[in-house]
Image 1: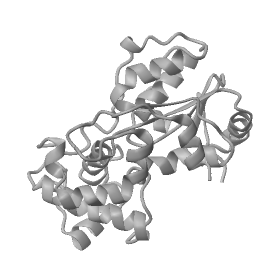
Image 2 (image 1 turned 120 degrees about the horizontal axis):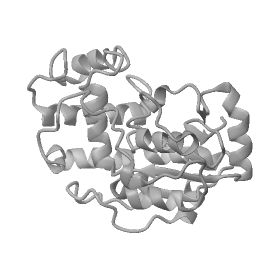
Image 3 (image 1 turned 60 degrees about the vertical axis):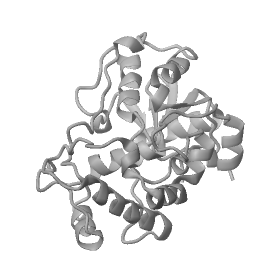
Length: 272
């Protein structure tokens, strides 16, 4: 299986396991900047050189050697499951992607036909009942994750623990896992633990939110989208995420973690 979703700087100063919808664009740009002294011109997910990515055949040997020998500082970043699934809905389902098309072609027509959701019209900018459509999308997300139908689960709403576990299961070990909600503290902890070709001053780094503007703006507070049934579905999908990464399942309005992440526990539970 190898190390899918793993990025590494060309200098091999750091290794990062990408978790979609968890500040991955900003982290990728920081990695790129730390090697080259400039940001990648465009979406870092489109970068074909300047950093190692597991998706590139030529990068697989260097990444595998490094991860298996723990040759570099290795980290990832996670996010509150409630806000992550909401962000996925507005970006990937309601939004027009950077190629000018709908995400995954037949995904939105399938959702409209089978689940009765609305997405804000052709351009994703129209008025619609966001809460009702999101709750129907949650049913779809649960169906893809639990039964793999009407399609396989998508990386943007599959559980974070599943992404994080692949590196551990194949012989890697994390030095740090931090929260998107405390990004500067977490990323600074990474940068302070290694040496880079070019110094990175986090206070001067912009946020590269590549999904911003793709879809309609969220019209309500987070907690309004989750009634009792929705919370039950979210817990069914993301139980391990809430527990391992210390997020508050009981209160969707509280996006902040409730305790410290225990790396030993994560390696033990996700390494089976």
